[in-house]
Every structure is written in structure tokens, then in C-alpha cells.
Image (cartoon, rainbow, N blue to C red):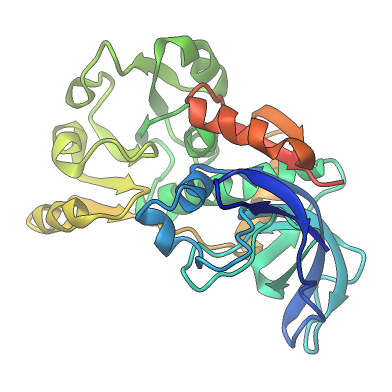
Length: 317
């Protein structure tokens, strides 16, 4: 099969790689129609320390986690989805994962995909998987967000942040404040948040609080910086684990507040929820750029530029 492979110089090229073979029991053989790019892909491609925990450093190195495609075959014991059904999801962020979604085919667990609604394009579905699930699981599960709550999204213009603003509203948040650069304030306001220019306002002084949830989607703040912005039983959530978070969690343990990191999981029920919101127009996945598979280098450059509003998707067919 054909796949995007990262060469010795770190550049993406399209090469022929081994086919994944038949679907084992409980698994699906999936034809990939679209993929999406995330900051995690940059970490993997550049060989950053964090990238070692996101994907196995096997050769050939095929990047990509998000996917949307059609089920080609099913393994024993799989009742759903069926062959020919369109599905979407993402590969696990794990040092044991040897696959990349920028390939013609993938083998994935049946319970890790959700049905792609007919009203939703493959690029949109692929671009929703990781970031939409991250936002949903962070706000609902770790943030314990309830109707009437107040939410601060740090980094509201990125893929996770853009979804988090909207999902906070869908979960009933009374008010959502989002930090971003001045150039992206109109974009963030259009998503449903009150935008705050992080270059003009120091994070601990962000107006609009106290907040029930502070979601550090950009992973540039800390619990210590967010503590003064939280309600007495508020939750701080980040997307990037680190040694500092251990101290944050310890500090939070001496109060009713919580501090934690979201570890996203591709789950059928949550993907079905996201697909339903997309289909009825309640949720929008902003596509900053959509490139063909031959132009992945262009998509990665756009992602690394810092100018992205939303997501970068890749058409595989």
C-alpha cells in the first residue's frame, strides 16, 4: 500500500510500505479516506522527547493519528460496524503504536471507531477525532462541567481549544472565556467565547472568573497560575503531562480543587456523540487548511507556523 513516510531528513514522501494484512479478531481493516494533522505529529516527526511516548520509533515512520474511512473487512467477533460503513476515530497515543493514519489502510479495534454521519465529510470527521474527544473528555470527565458553569479555555483558537469552546456551550456552560492572539480574537468570538488577548493580559489576570473549569488546551499555563482563577471546587486540566503537573496535583490535594491531565481515548460512544453534534450543526470543526496527501509538507508547515485557526486535514483519496 501507499503511505506518507518521513525520510532521513524529516521530510514526508509517498512510498510503498507493507500492507497491514487481515483484520484479527475484534479488529477492523479500514480504508483511509482522510486524515488530519496535530501538534503531536510534529513532536513525532522531529523526534522530540514527548514524541517517544506518542508513537513507536519504527521504520518506516508513517505519521498521523486521526482518520476517517470505510470498513473493508472485519475480524471474528465484530458485530458492529459492518463492512462498507464509514467510520472515524484516532490511533492510540502510545509508544506501542506502530501505525500512522497517512496510509491507505489501518487495522484498528472495533470499539475505537464511531459511525461517520453521511452529512459529514471525511476530512471534517478526521479533523474532529482527536481534538473533539480531548475537549469532550477533559470538560465532561475531568472538569465535571455542569450546566451554568463558567469555563476558561487557554489556547481557544487551536484544534482542541476551538472544539472546547463549543463543547463547553453544548454541556451547558453559562460563560466561556478563551485566550488567543489578537489576530484570532474574531475567530474565537465566532466560536462562542469571550476572547482575551494573551499578549495583553497575563494569564493569572484573565477576566471573567472565578471559573469552574480552567482548561489549558495550549499546555502553556500551570495549576499554580490558574489557582487564583478557580472557584473553591474548580478543576484545572492540561493536555501535556510533566513533572510540574505532579506538584500541581499535590498542591490541589490540599483543597477541594483538582488538577489533572487529559489522556484522550478513541471510544465509540464519544465519537457517536461528536458525529451527532456535527450532523445537526451544533458542533463545527473549523478546517484552516485541507491538503492532498502529496502536499503533506505544506500542511505540516502551516501547522508549525502557529497561524492555524482550527485544524489541518489531509485528503487521502
